Image 1 (cartoon, one colour):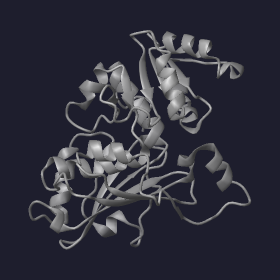
Image 2: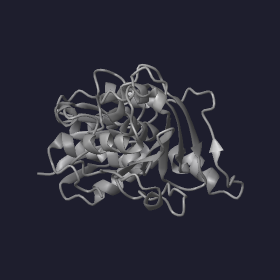
Image 3: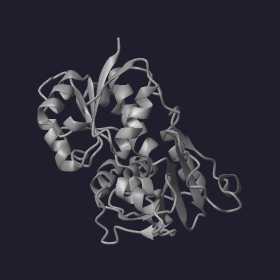
Image 4: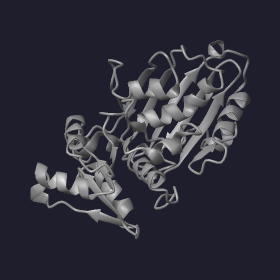
Amino acid sequence: MAYKVFVDGQEGTTGLQINEYLAKRVDIEVLKIDADKRKDLGERRRLINASDVTFLCLPDEAAKESVRLVDNPNTCVIDASTAHRVNPSWTFGLPELAKDQRAKIRASKRIANPGCHATAFILALRPLVASGLLPADTQVAANSITGFSGGGKKMIEHYRSPQRIDAPRPYALGLTHKHLPEMQTYAGLSVAPIFQPIVGPFYKGLAVTAFLHPKQFARTATPADVQKILADYYAGEAFIRVAPTDLEANTEGGFFNVEANNDTNRVDLFVFGTAERMLVVARLDNLGKGASGAAVQSMNVHLGVDESLGLV
């Protein structure tokens, strides 16, 4: 049996990538909307309610509008916007979050896809909070460097134009990035992190770095101890690799490759530093595990098919 899937917002970066994943699947029938009807509420309503799964690849307000169109109780909505990520009526679409998260995704008809920065931050920090090593009231400082594809079509056009700026560009300097609520909530922190991202002059790839001082820990811990907490938490996870604490093996002459997980749904986690100061780094493809790949992974979990189907 083929599952019917509709991508509402199929012309955006995330929607296009989801369609690429789905095009390779024999178990999926993609419901297409005519280009001249993309803003036709009646046609969108029809396709949403005819689907087993609808992906929302839209701005927040448009995503909320699409949710109001759903009247088929069997239609599962996976929303890639920020509109519902900390809404308790929605399930957070990160299967590796906790042992019971897959069961929640399987049972839910409303799944909120995580943001790219948030995915990396949460996967890096949640095990440390859950283990009790990092107290929940710690204000963690972190930054992120990401490819320009995360900014959508306008930013992509800018970086591909002759007027582009070929230099890293820090942003969200007001420290109110839209991913902060989910980063705090799902990392298990009681205070929002200090988070400052950077757009790099490359298409895709992302690395979040959290800065940790042993004085923040509830007990004495070395980098090897932190690495073991992460490795134990994610043992058996197909898409998460926790690297050994080996600076030479994890860098290229001391330099870190942000793009190493491009075109995959994988996340690599690293612990760098000494007993006096540490970095925890999470690396992923901002269009893969940071967006479209994660959405497809949640769809697979919800439908009860092989979680890795169509993903690498």
